[in-house]
Length: 351
Image (cartoon, one colour):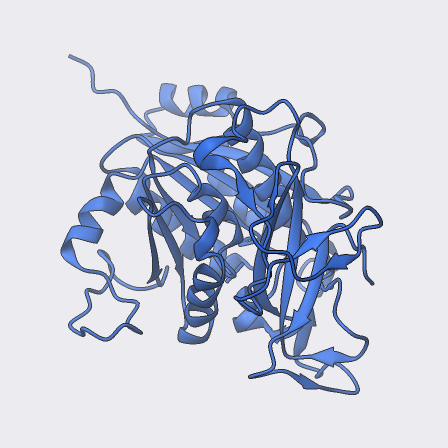
């Protein structure tokens, strides 16, 4: 997307360079439910350690895929959890075979344009799904993957454990810099052969993405070879990017550009339906959700559209979340989270 202390989910530490305290949330700011581990009345940037349980029988745990638990707020120390779930420091060269810990710098609150600085529940659901695929299949091995509206980059960094190339994309320098910081924080767990790029992708801008003319290490523009690699992507992922009609329209414009060319691609999109009273509808509605559903057809609808001469369409199906184990410990999925598998179906030309 473009917080009480459940110890098993997050162990946290402040990012002192930009941390500050506040007596309350600014009126124009929003706050995710995922702000666990931070002190009360804390505002600003915070480094949390997200713990994901690993299945005991997963072949994924071993050799190159053995995970190291570490505290990236101090790169000379390593973090582990004792039997009571408390932080145990320091402990060098200790590897955990039952837990993966990912350090994420994120904000506790933000303005609407900067919500990508926060961690949201849909991001954890998508993380669960990606890990489940990685543990039970080889579908993501060696692929090129793109995270849209990557925000903190959590999902894309998990994918980087097995993918060949991962593009973490979002819009705005502050969000991109924070995402790049998280890649740096977790560099120890990322395979050296995996290419991870943090790149700007403005859904409302022209296509292809702007190329960078700068050699600065802080530039998030694209070069030609990266754009060519983008066309070779087979997997797209996005979490909590459906919350306004305007943004949803822009997202599907970008998806059509990405999915109508190159390799066939699949999108896994996690969303949370947030209900608000609408003056236009004089009813309680989930912002952006109806617009999202207007783009995505089910298989039956798609067949009917093809019969009526429709050239192409986004075809999607909801994934049953009860079939996806919850690897991210102790967060509440609730009833308003959805996970979708979406493909771009093109009309087959008759010969």
